[in-house]
Image 1 (tube, rainbow, N blue to C red):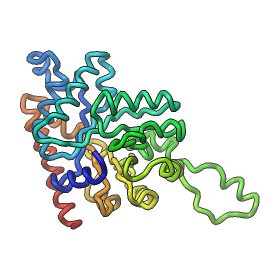
Image 2: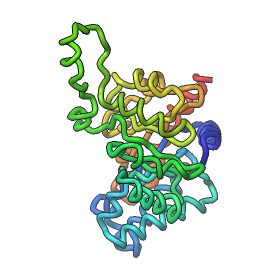
Image 3: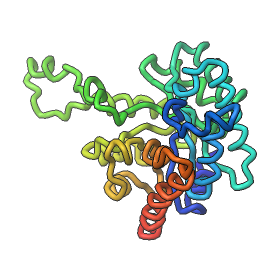
Image 4: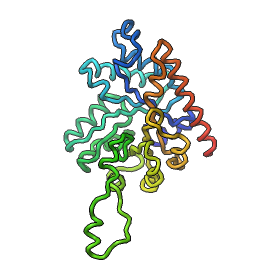
Length: 289
């Protein structure tokens, strides 16, 4: 799905919502384990059927599938093909895999998710450098989503650090400079490798203080913004600071939607939770216009 198609999809659905399919076998309603040979897929299928008209994207987190070995991979494949063939599609699909390795290894990851599986996008760790990211950028209509500023508390350990260059420059009498944070340097450099047509950036909703500066660094790129809901991100503030002329944001919510209920009504509850966000997003988009 290219940028134009993604923007049109968001505007058609009046939703920039992404639902994270972080499907944990120990957390899904227990009755599914009694009625389905593949309870993970059955859970995903019902969530998808209940929410697909309200969301622009789905984002399976690969750890929840890979932890079950070949059976988990089978559940993921079935989920992806179900999405690809859904009569209420298309939707944008993101593999939350956080891959990134030396070039020839990244090329195999790209084949796995863009050829073997029908994903539109993949989250990518850029810290091995340009050759680790480029293989994901070579597929037309596919996207690399670069980890820039993530939503977890540990993001503060490294991503907001400022390199120690100021200590060196002070020796030469240079004192009035803006010292960039590590995630800002990463975003500036990664822009040189791809374009707004094939590269997005992760910008966590839990770091609202940084969203305005992120948008200044990447004015045209889409941002994948996790952390709304269980992690505390505020939708109205996010939209105000991060939207651009093409909408430019995909906001993810996982647990607050898919685990809105642990009972037999879990899919109905998921729809209600998704609907609440969809209504907010529709209002924001109409106000923006």
